[in-house]
Each structure stands twice: as C-alpha cells, then as structure tokens.
Length: 343
Length: 282
Image 1 (tube, rainbow over the protein chains, first blue to last red):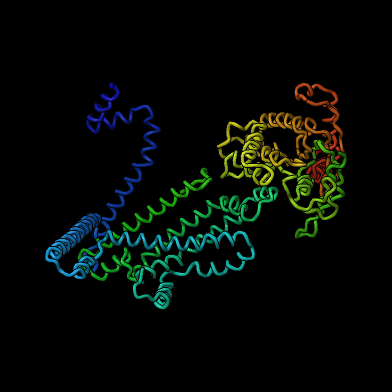
Image 2 (spheres, chains in turn red, cyan; image 1 turned 90 degrees about the horizontal axis):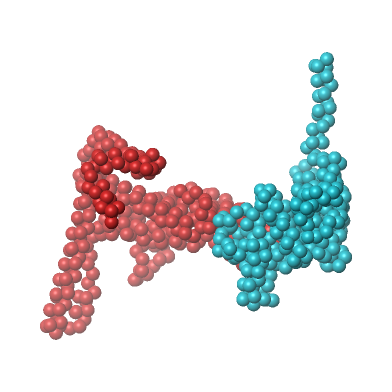
C-alpha cells in the first residue's frame, strides 16, 4: 500500500523534479546510459532529420510547388485517413440503400430474379490508400511464398549435389541481377497468353506483379539455402554416417535443421527485395497497390501530390521494416541457434 | 576373444598437390575383446587417421581392418565414435540426441518403450539425467562430452572409438570425466580404442598404450602393457612407482626418441648459427 502511494506521488511531481529524481536513482548511471542509447539518441536523430527536411525541402521549387515538409506530409496522412473513412461510410450507406430497396421489393412481391440481381450488386467505389496497402501486402506475400516454395527445394538440392550446383550456379548468377522492370513486359505477355479465362480468379495486374516479385525473390533464397546445406559440419555428417541414417532421415534430421539459419537469412533478403520490386512492378502493371498509388499521384499532379507520394514513401519504408522484423521474429522462433546475432 | 579387432598392416596415402603423401605405413595391431587401448603420439602422426579407418569413415590405401574376422569398409553403429568436439546436433535436446541413435540402431529389435528406457539408462550412466530437455548450447563442455559418450554407448558398439574425447576440456573436468569413464568401463567392459595427447590419461585408463612414431609414414613405435590392478585410483597411483615407471616410459618415447617434427627441424638451424655466435663472442 505504502509503495503504491509513493509511486502515485512520484507521478504527480512536476516534470523537472521527476527528471532529477531519475538521475539520482539507484542505477541511474547504467540506466541512464541505456535509456540514452536506446531511446534518446534515436529520437534526437529523428528531430534533426525533421529539421533538416523542413529547411531543405522549402528550398526546392518544383512545377507542383515547393517540396513538402513534414507538416504537409502529416496533413496529407490525415487527409488520406479521412478519405478512407468517408469512402467506407459511402460503402456502408450504399449497402443500406440496397437493403432498403430489397426489403421494399420483397414487400411489393416483385419477381425473385430481380431481387437476386439487387442482392448481387457490389459497391464499386475507388480503393482508398489503406485498401492499396492491403493489396500490396497480399501481392508481395503471394509472390514471396511461391518463390520460397520453389527456391528452398532447389537450394537444398544444389547444396547437396555439387554437380547440380555447378549446373545451376551460372543461371543463378545471370538471372539474379536482372531488374524487375525487365521481367515485367515478358511476364505480362506470358500471363495474357497463358492465363485465359472468362471468369478470372485473379486480376492479370495482380498476377503480373506477383510473378515479377517471385522472379526476383528466388535468388537470395536459393543461394543462401545452398550455402547453408553445403556448409553442414563434417562432424555432423560423420555422425550421420556412423548411425547409417538413410537419405531421408539425414536430410530432415541433420541437413535441413542445420541450414535453417541460412535459409532464413535468404528468406529475409528475398522478402526485402520482393517488397522493393513490388512497388516498381505495381507502377507498371497497374496493380491497385502502393505502386499504383504513387504512379497515379504523379500523373495527377495536384498541389498535394508530392506530399501524398511522400506519405506513401514513408509507409512503404515502414512496412518494409515491419516485414523484416516479422521475418526476424519467425527466425528466432524456428531457429535453434539462439546465440547467433540476429539483426 | 583374441584378435577381436585386427588392424592388419594398414597404410594410408593421400593425394596432395605436391604428389602423394604417405601418412601411415604398415600399422599392425591386434586388440582383444574388452581391452582398453590408447593411441598416443604427437600431432599430425596419423592417430586420427587410424581411428577413422577403423570407424570406416576413411578407406585405407593398403591393408585392412577386421572386426570379428569380418572386413570393415563402411561406417556403422557397431563402431560408435565419440568425437573430440562432441558433435551433438545443436537443435535436439540431450535426450533427443541420444534417442536419435537409439531409434536408428534398435528400430526393429526394441519397442518404443524399451527404446525410451534404454535412452534414459544410458544418460543415467553418464550422470546426465538431470538435463534431458536441455539443448547442447545450454550445457557445459564436459556435459556435452558426457552426452556424446552416452550416445556412443547407447549404440551398444562392439568397439568404442574415442578421438581425444577430453582434449577440449579443462583439466579438472577432464579428471572427472576420466573417473566416470573408468566406472563405466568397469561396468560394461567395452572394447575401447582411444586417441589421446595426455600421458597421465593414457596410463590411467589403458590396458595397453600404443605409441606412434612421427609422420609422414607413421607407424606403431612401441606398445606398452600397463599391468596396474583395477579399479585404479588416481590419488593412490600418484605415489605408485610402477605407475610412474610407465609414465616415464611414455614420456621418454614421446620426448626423447620421437621429438616433435618442428623441434627436429629447429635444431640444425641452431647449430648453423652457433659458430657465428662464438665468433661474435670471441
């Protein structure tokens, strides 16, 4: 009880004396330096960056006005959110209206096919910024998952067989540096030729973007998996020989677990590349994601466009960061090598 | 049983960029069942090569190895190996590391429950029952080596091969491990071939010490029979003249007659420089 009351009292003290109390506290020196390096320094750096941005941006004149500073970007973030809210409200109202009409039609005993037609009507408003974020995430995940499903087995096979590695390595080295923008036209042509359907499950723009992501995601995973698999410690291989493990057991009990850290390194690199590639692919393929948003704003050329593009840039960066962190967390969960420094 | 394990005039030549390198030449050794043999010699004399050939991990260039009159030409659990760096699978717990071996060797002959209790029994033998669920990264070096020994023992090998099993441990842990190994040996009476650098370890544990000459073309230099009664106690033996005699024999072999190759090559150089030194002094 007493500790509780002192705590609440501390909390009510003015900021300055609380700060002084913190400095004098038991572990103040260690605690302070830890606090300084983990929170204060990044925040200070962020402030410096914002100040430089604000002062620098106002110096640059473009045909759409000066380059926007942090304040305009924040304004546009709010306006994008407001637009999203408004769009959702419109959608809700649309369905409410439809429901009303349906109820009326049922009351008037109108023919069933007409009611059904009304029920099937979909809202066709434009995607909001937040819808576009979700589209982008969905597209990159599909591309990345397809790439992983292809790349991990190939990587394992290459790591186990030197002959296969020698055979595939030149192909990897040639295709790895190819820009997504070079793949995209080819992918577009192939998809429109092959994926012909009256009732397509996926939009072509979605397939084009996802497949382009796949093509660029393959290589880091293949290379890192192959390196991981070929680097299985010779001692562990000897253990497996002494135990006379068969091929299957050896692969699943020794080779794959041993290369899990490297496989994940490859996957993380792949996902990072995939996310970068996706934005470019969406711009050209017109997949309704963040890439298209940036492109449309650029074409739109209103006075707010630059600030909106900057919002997108920051969101793209932040999501890329979150994707990397979530892969890292997954890696920590799955990997046996807890000591390895994972950054 | 005499000639349980027969290392029959094996030689080993590795191809290198500078032509073939003859590592082992005409190594001949007969080991009885239940015998504890130590292989001692300087680094690079091919001790590990002998052990790897017996394990089947390497194929000898000439000669062969017979176990119960059958030729060895591939690795197998009947010649379990305790590796110097424990070689436990880091992603498996202590229990699972041993269980993997047990499952592999007794797939058909033991039921699941039997395999479970056999795994536990072997971990009990090396006093590791308290850490069944720990990962190798979470236990000390000595404990890892204990688990490595439990894994090898659990295979019920005809010959237990140990490649400097305690080489990476600190001396205090090493003495504990040696005592444990003696207890286990008294209980199970395995046929053991152990490689070591440590003279005390060799004399304390072995029935015979096989001393190898320096490479290249290393071979068996001398074999010393250790006739000390078991169980052996390291404290009592420290004052024992017979023990000290054996110890001196091995030290003499290693440091008088078969010095390390580096020291040999260093000597002529010193001789060459000494006249100049004399001149300078005069």
